[in-house]
Image 1 (spheres, rainbow, N blue to C red):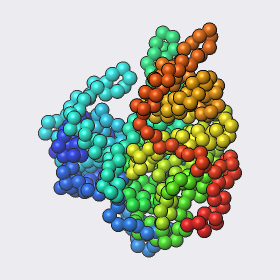
Image 2 (cartoon, helix red, strand yellow):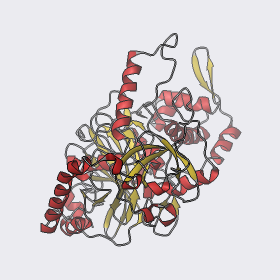
Image 3 (cartoon, rainbow, N blue to C red):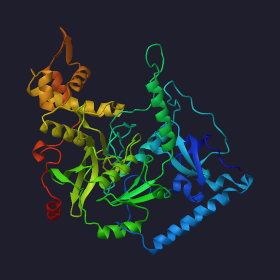
Length: 511
């Protein structure tokens, strides 16, 4: 049987081993997955997003003689590859390759490498799914497949509870270094999708040059990032299945798994290298000033210019879980606010947000991410609320970088509604200006939120708030309780101004 062609559509066995889904074959590579292990019913239990690792790793740095020998073997294999490629194509079989597939109708985070025994080659080629005017697939799946995708994204915590993944596509935000922001634009879990062209353009259905240029950029980005280069990372006690491509240096992209020091975020190709590194690494918290402490939660302010390597590593790791991030190394113009959970071993990174040091638009958040093992625990709203607490301490009003994705709008709208309704319950006569000053929320965001709540009217050229105490109470009682930052736990004197523990030595002595 001949190899399966790239760009073709086949029915592929879903990772639960029960459901068949239409998928596009994106790429192929020489087989690495044993056929007997590829069926999802026999898939190793360890390969689950957020699953605790079986053994705790220690630490690392340079490669020893055995590592160097391994590199030589890899180099020899790479040198032999061109010669092998000249073999007669007719002698190659479909089983000689693994295939990278995209499940039609699902987010790219579920793309994966499969062996040929997961592909229904007997039924043969399938027609591409119908596509609507915005480029989205109309292909529908059975309910079993939907639930399978949910379980595939669930993060398993040490107590066996499962944390679901935050869904939705991500948009380009400005965070210069993967996950947090560096100088020119990164993306984030909440920020808007810069992707698809919206059909009408200007005037009579024409598409502007800017839109055409944006479409070209999006298409190029899609081509470059269509295949995940890293499949898993081991970080602390968790083994995490990645979602998207991240531009790690090429020498780290020839392996399916990276090992990451959870304190300094240095990444390595081998577990024994990590073990040696941990024996030498004396960092037990993010570099920078601790500006927030509440029980076992701490937030550190990390300056991208002063801690460039850490910030770049954070960005590269974050890109594994963010779709449209574009800048990963120019981190100087950004501050990173890293949320950690602490225990006797140190401070474990939960998530972060980044913001530009000097924003002409008064953006108070560029990129935000909660790492998969800690999702569905309220940390996203916590980070949003912290960004506004910092804004209020600066005596400013702020807003997340626009445009927001659909998921971003829902998350922020929920937070804005809760804050504004809480103020209006205590001060029903508050004006829009009063609301902005007390909450730190921009006037434009306040108006759009109150419009969604049907609590604002336009009268004689002005916006007038219409408050019904019973409606306010009903809205607040219907809201899910949020995990918010507490102003009393915040010690911050402006960017670079220090915090609860001002110097690295003080933090080290405090552990």
